Image 1 (cartoon, rainbow, N blue to C red):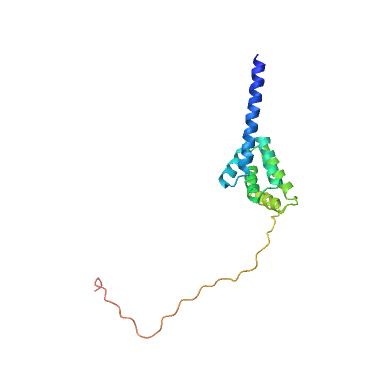
Image 2: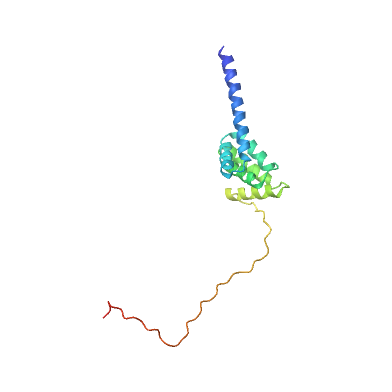
Length: 153
């Protein structure tokens, strides 16, 4: 009798967990930056399930803002998942997508990984430097009359 109850509770728990993961996936692709970061952080606490979702987001066909949020989640991984997140970032450096490369490079740079060459972005055309205009000189001539200071004797 108890085994039937436990099996039912486990199934129910699995379904609610799957619903939560689906909801977090949607939030990760949201247009709201705050909800993207919150979803990524929540996924970082979900061990293997969170790791798989965040990796799929980084290597998938998503906009850069979504990939940045996923990288944030991977950077926040703790314990044994941290090493797997680092491996995912290093794998991302070899990816064909330039957005994925730049996101992974930046994430590794933030994490302080040595030996990682940052991906250089194309520089914009050199803009002319704005220089300050020197102040106008006061003409030499008559000395301006000053009012006498009443406190001075």
